[in-house]
Amino acid sequence: MTIAYRHAVVDGIRIFYREAGRPDAPALLLLHGFPTSSHMFRELIPLLADRYRIVAPDLPGFGFSDAPDAEVFKYTFDDLARVVERFTEQIGLARFAVYVFDYGAPVGFRLALKHPERISAIISQNGNAYLEGLSEGWNPIQAYWKDPTPENRWALRSFLTPETTRWQYVHGVRDESQVAPESWTLDAALLARRGNDEIQLDLFLDYVSNVALYPQFQAYFRKHAPPLLAVWGRNDPFFLPTGAEAFRRDNPRAQVQFFDTGHFALETHVREIGAAIGTFLAEHIG
Image (cartoon, rainbow, N blue to C red; front, side, top):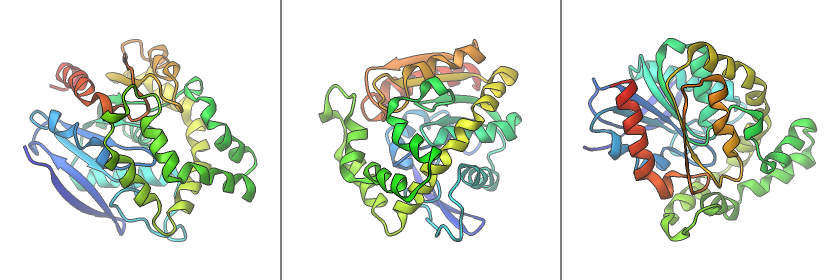
């Protein structure tokens, strides 16, 4: 098994992605969150690529994908989803399971709303779709939604510091020595690129659009009842376990598993989560 590091050009934006597995195998699309990239899947991909075609893109403004100026590309979740949709079409993903994490959840759920026939299964790793899943850690960002003043925007810059990035990785982890330092170091370096702070602040503001879509996401779960596995870091400071449990309210067949770790659960529990995903996918997509 080898991982290929590729690029696709979508509407003039160069999208970096990792790919592994047979081209004709059932497909799994991995969507990362803030403030990371497809690098977060580096240890998960080898655990699944013997059975599935794995594709993990970096979203525009993240990782090694282009980060066009905000005057050229509007950093909204609608536009991120549009790029990912075009990306999947361009590389030939006609039907696929999707793993959604953090920001990847509203992107992936938008794809499911628009093209439910393309989604074979959903794995949500701390990817929220319920109000009760939002912790008090969102309070500063919610204040910005309600009153988008320069002062409230400036206050959110604390989320973009190297110290906060490291904290997101180690908070709630029982043994910090299990978390590879290159993970938060890479994220912090890419966040520090010129202009990237404004990109992230624009996305903080637009996250309110995701909350507005929660009822539609939930209606999708009820109507289509996709096979759904929630694998959740129980100690996540942003997305609470109640958000994982809520999937069962709209999709009674949803499976929920908790792990004694934080937001970036793959850093400490990749083998356990990989095994859970392998069992789940074998049951539902072959």
